[in-house]
Image 1 (cartoon, rainbow over the protein chains, first blue to last red):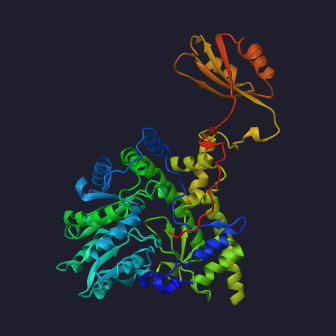
Image 2 (image 1 turned 90 degrees about the vertical axis):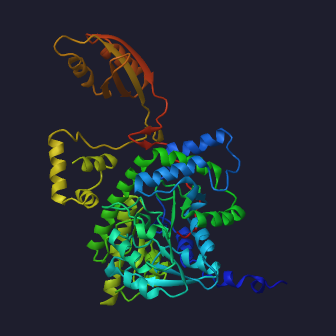
Image 3 (image 1 turned 90 degrees about the horizontal axis):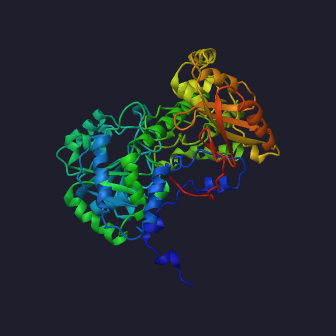
Length: 392
Length: 159
């Protein structure tokens, strides 16, 4: 008998499995359960985009593209970034990846040497820490605070920097808190980074989903531009999660090196998806607006519902998540969410799944139908009522 | 106002409270706006989208092209009024192109539609000709697909 545990990479064995798998395992066994757990658009990809993918298959575009992706797509990304965010990258400084996730992985692997530290504001998307660990780097978590609307402050950043700091992740608009960074927040961050060699990985996958103000990228701040690797993709803006398509932009010298990892590990992003993405970028602005408008309505509905139930909730300005405070009932986030699922058949995710600093909170995704949101709120009301009477 | 109307068109069961929350407006404002829209016939009713093919109810829907001679003074309106007053008429539109009115009629049988066309519609003064098309299957109505797509398989993933 081989002892597989012994022969596997230490690094992999030490990775923590996702803490919320159990929620979905329970959910699968339930009838009439409502999930506000999975973080993805509830829309199907707009038909004209799907049709462009189908058409590319009819035309026989079934081979690899060049490693960096179709030139027409990279040109379209370049035009899109200029049009929507006033960010200028030429097609040579953009390449197409398998989702934003690959772009994050590549950026970390291209920059991090063993022992290098990567600053990760938390709560945030779960992938950064494990990917840094896999690159033999050291994740340094910085807990953002509700009173700062979960923005990374200059002081918090300054306190986390050491001589080994290589990279700062800016996961905004943020999953799970819905926080965004304003221009002045980025300017303050720029001040702290001035004179250092610290690079920035800006994960802007939710850039199109901001409410009340346009997204500001570190690339819009002149002092940050030279040190920024911009990651974005099609999943959230165009409801294209299953197409697995993203991109990364950055300084030519880094992009050239980074492309090698992509060449050896991936070859090229899916061809069908690339053709569909060209259509999305050329003719999809209206879809973005319509979907954002729809999320915004549900955002307001859920926010009011949570507050009416007496749950304190910071008003999220981006993405499609809400991060209400659910401490104060004598339960940990995990206990709260587990009991809520078991007793009321509604899935939400404990804040602790998104790194340190998430205790006392839960992530509620509002990319779900109004009916689901209302059902979840009604059940939450019952649940909270029971918790309160248990305690009194 | 238009934002409220769009929401009601999406789902007329939304309550004033829900609409107020979704639009960030005051609930009273929503109630008053809806009431005013009803009074001014901007909102002309609330109804359900029924797929009768899934019931035991037998009925047929026909789409009838009608050519007419417009009347002096009243143009198309007087003839239109004579057509849309029939209960069988579900919708009536004035069209550009090779015919004038598009009449959508629902009845319990083919024969009933034929009788409606022959005995009521065609004899109206000013109607020159009609062409009747029967609807065989309704795929989508009011932005709602009537076909139920198969559900995706269960997914366990963390995002």
